[in-house]
Amino acid sequence: DAKTTQPPSMDCAEGRAANLPCNHSTISGNEYVYWYRQIHSQGPQYIIHGLKNNETNEMASLIITEDRKSSTLILPHATLRDTAVYYCIVRVGNTDKLIFGTGTRLQVFP
Amino acid sequence: NAGVTQTPKFQVLKTGQSMTLQCAQDMNHEYMSWYRQDPGMGLRLIHYSVGAGITDQGEVPNGYNVSRSTTEDFPLRLLSAAPSQTSVYFCASQKNTYEQYFGPGTRLTVT
Image (cartoon, rainbow over all chains, first blue to last red; front, side, top):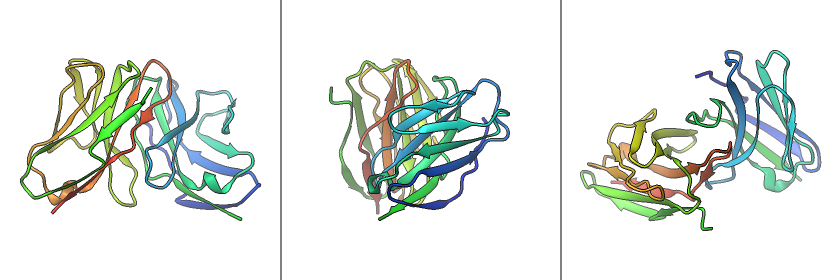
């Protein structure tokens, strides 16, 4: 499985866009990029996924570079409730197992 | 739908004791999995199942057993608890979509 690299922590001011990077330079052609987040001690929550096109949903946008070796999760207007650990995961389709790394701890401040 | 439920929420065991962590889902999901999360760490996959009667090992399977006799339930058994198994355990399920749903977790302490 391809591995991902994320910065351990980031800060973002409330109301501003939070841009969380992820490096997955060894990703295979059939592996998707997934993002999950974990707020405090709760179970992780799915955010978004993509293969090669940029994706947007009600929570976030996912920008994948053309060579697919990196991606960025964008929270367009961060709120205090977005403070969480964000995990970037690569996975084959929707049937392969999810392998979590250590993620990025995003702190949104007032 | 109740989603993914886990019992108990908290548990304290003595070294050598055995117990079963329960996980159930009412969404008719085929795929279920168990993770553990140690303090300050990401989640690590213990075991997973792609359907009733089918299970496989994840990253850290030693010391744990699973079985999947029904679609709804996926219990995790600790055979002989050790302090190294002190952790938070999460169960998750998924159907033929891209989103995994996680339970609220079981916080286990082994003394």
